[in-house]
Length: 545
Image (cartoon, rainbow, N blue to C red):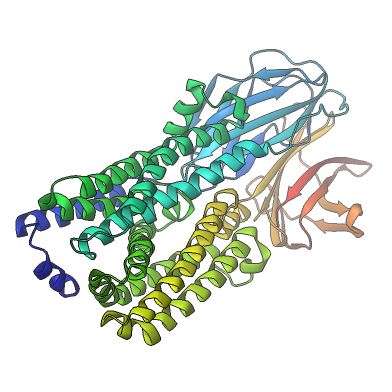
């Protein structure tokens, strides 16, 4: 509070009661978002399916089940028959992390595709498909996996302009009301960015609905698109963002005595909007990540929002430009400190290991953002230590130089917005690691025997395998010996053969097994059922990186 006392003495338009009300409103908005319940880790991953991917069944299943790494909400479920005919699956039940889907009809022989698209609680859709066959496998029907770029581009553009409205608009309104004094140079620019945000917010919501359903841009106006977008956690982000943008406009256009609490509440709304959805806010532990996102958003809005009005004030070499600069320079250091701490905490939680910075798309985008931030911090540091003191006392030429430098900072900030919007399409390493730690399971079915094979964890490296074996009609199978054989000839890897042991719980187990590379492997189980009979069954199994 000490940092803003000089501001209170220079503008008496807002009384103490109004300022207290503004702070309370800001705290309430933040606590509502941070305390909202959510158990999601973000970016769900399929960890088990029945029928399993690649399974060959004797008859048509009455239902399908998909088990994910976290609770999800189905968006689109489709069964593609061997002739390529799609069958929408609309009857399903949710139980914790399991989606049970009713099969509306008996399926004929051949290979089918079960395609699914679900929404995880971070607001991002996840899709995939699996193959299974009835009787004799056939060539898999074609399922389009091409990316529809117009909806993705629309989603990215919408997010960039929403950031402009929130950070430059709401943050700019806060800077004009709290830092600029009575002159408010740059108010037209801030108003334009606020209006930009008010347009971008609903546009982003529609784009979110398109992306969630995997629909083409031509369906943008359909009610189902907007209902779907609103039903995701991003819907809360848009609603809170609209409130924050409205508060920013009111702080500029409303009565002077209410300007400060309105601008402060709008600034809090920026942090609340960002904390309502997204990778970082959905990460665990949420008691830490949501407040960090909240503070990070407020810090960005304070810094970025002040740049344009400050640059315009200095460019005009007005007396108020020096006052604006002096107030901004007093407050920016603690704000940048909070911004840096929150950013570091979130980056550590999301990336987890230094290797992921280069090994994942999310990490590489983070490196680009860090590079831009280093450039921005360097330029800001030079401005502070070389130009600020002279500009504060009214040196005209120095003020103009500082205004030009602030223009460059603005360009860097816009580039950072573009990079941050790209994270929407890249799951963080944290989510990838959670998915990789889940087991992979496959059901292997043949006439003579069947087995449920589980490999844990389901990624390349040291693993253990557990097998439950049965006869072809689900009866008990008392094998004398069981051997697990994993092969991947397309990678030049010879078959890995490991004898299984029987721990006494009805299963067979293989420990100390190392799967060297990810990808699709062939798992074969050799069962010696008598001294003269060996039964071999096999199926593909996908090992994650």
